[in-house]
Amino acid sequence: MTYSVHQHWDPLRVCAVGRSYPPEFYSFIANSRVRSVMERIAIETEEDYQKLIKLLESFGVEILRPIISEDFSVYLKNGKYVPPPMTPCDFSIMIGETFYHNWCTEMQIYQNIAADNWPKISTVGEYDLLPDVIKQEVQAIIDKHQGTISQEYKHILKKISAQGNKVVERVIKGKTSLINRAMITRVGRNLYIGTHDSNDDIEKLKQTYIPLFPDHRVRIINTDGHSDGTFCPVVPGLIVSLRDVPTYADTFPGWEVVYLPGQSWDAVKPFLDLKNKNRGKWWVPGEELNDDFTQYVEEWLGHWVGYVEETVFDVNMLVIDEKNVVCNNYNEKVFEAFSRHGITPHIVNFRHRYFWDGGLHCITSDLHREGTQKDYFLERRLT
Image 1 (cartoon, rainbow, N blue to C red):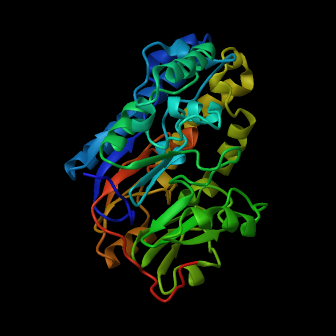
Image 2 (cartoon, helix red, strand yellow):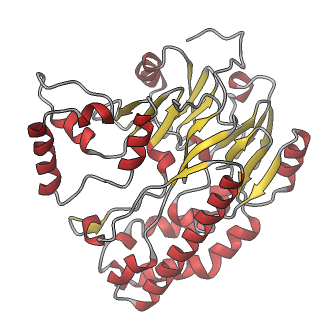
């Protein structure tokens, strides 16, 4: 059975769910105060993953997860630990029957080093059929760089390929690709691609991405970052958005839009300011001795976790089907809209969402949903 996704509200059947490092990973932290905080965050993060998995499985969803090596030393690169595979959404997306990803694998290394006369490949299965001498050269590069090639998603990619799907890696070489589930919203024949920031050249983006999807209408929308953290088309006719994006009347004509000013990222701005000051330091051995960093992790656990749980609603939601959606919290305005549209909300509080930069949509990647491509805007031209 070939996997496919055409609309993100079609019934979910197969889903990748991320994974964080276990608490024992943080044994390298000498500062006991910081280490205990990171261990607790690790334990609670997996607890919340399991709550989400249990809910999805109750709807008959098959769950696939990345695998983390028990040898944590393979994740230490140039004096810094690489982040764990927590947010598959940020690096992958199924569009129709084609799976796009930027998960680093042997195949990606091959594509980076391949000479002009080497075989052209686009799937994991095709890589496996390459001559051993070529695969040995790729492995030598991996060994030289001490395992820099992530193996966490390898089994997932093989399963997708085994279903008969085309698997495409890093479509646009040398550029930051927008082809991932955090930036692209799939609404049948329409693809809405967000911008990284206000400096993006919209016309150049159109020239880049429209030819890649000739069977879709590609629209570039100003989101200034991950679009799934800005708005969510929950079901046909309903959008939940953090702010009034002027293009909604044009891009989703006639749809109800529920605005939530001051929620999500805006509600935790003081924490984000502190986070930006300490960004990435938890992956650098020795930084935990920094007083500012100690304050940062202790303040997160001592104040912000409870604050987020009590007051913050996140538009970064996972839709199971047209009648069920997973969200992080209760919001009267949103839940009233859900009721009007016959939607049942299921609350799974991913407690450390803002610590990890990963909401419920980010920490998943829908690999297969029932249904075929629909056209919700028949009057629009295919351009």
